[in-house]
Picture 1 (cartoon, rainbow, N blue to C red):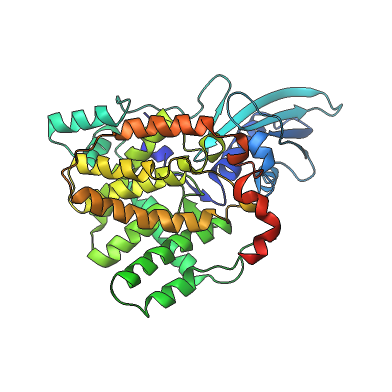
Picture 2: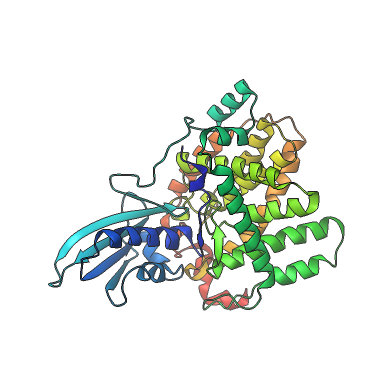
Length: 402
């Protein structure tokens, strides 16, 4: 299992799979072929189908010298390895191809090629949540202590940086107003939600605040702002909003917050290893479902839950998003993506309450839900996996009514 740093990647929105990943691949190819005269990038499958809405072309072009790159779009051609594929070609002054490479953006900003997992760094000896729980139970540990035991010494400094950027994205999003960039002309809502929250008391006020925080980060992501994948850009609003809300309501210390981030990262890493966090591969259940599982686990740990209650909470976070399609209107990370972050954040808090009311025993384990999610994703038609050719994406002409 990879480091949880692969779950928390720092970068700019709007999409970890469509902007962060392809840009990273482009940089690697360019650095290896700087003597080439011109370059060609061919986008396949989901990467081509929603690439313009996700600013994939802008991200890739920013790496190469101006005028030196040609981009070809092939949305109906899917590579076997992964739906998010990009092939790079380096050409000499005669137009002959002198080098070529195909990369796959597998979600969360990570890339692989046909032969080698370029960012493979399996530092945990565990295959799934069950093995982690058995290890914790034998040694009297909580999940965050597993992270501390196997990660590099700088993990807490890294998570502190992650938390600082999460907080900044919430607060920046609450201040920014206006219309998000795109033809949809979608207005930001976070600032107004927070103002309206102050007019309420009790549970309504608390829920409105959670919504505001989630909208704030998701709107920043949609505008290309600096965020942290958790586990992706499209689902980046869940974890920050949940933790920001809990800190403000219960005055949890930074140490407690960082430990909650560690546990949540472990949950995300397990999903990534055994299924997928890519909307292009398994639909939005892999993105927002995993984010909700992470937020649910973090919340339950903060409230003193046992390792079994934490696992139960994470299981509910993923279970109740099974089958969720990835069907962005106009290929943009705006409708329905932004609102989904708000509702997933609220669900995470509910899962904590449900888990804390029982003793952690339940019939369907987290690992079984992960496998179910993977199979469900594979069974979904491609029109529901980030191609904007089915579901809500068909209503792109009615987006002004949103």
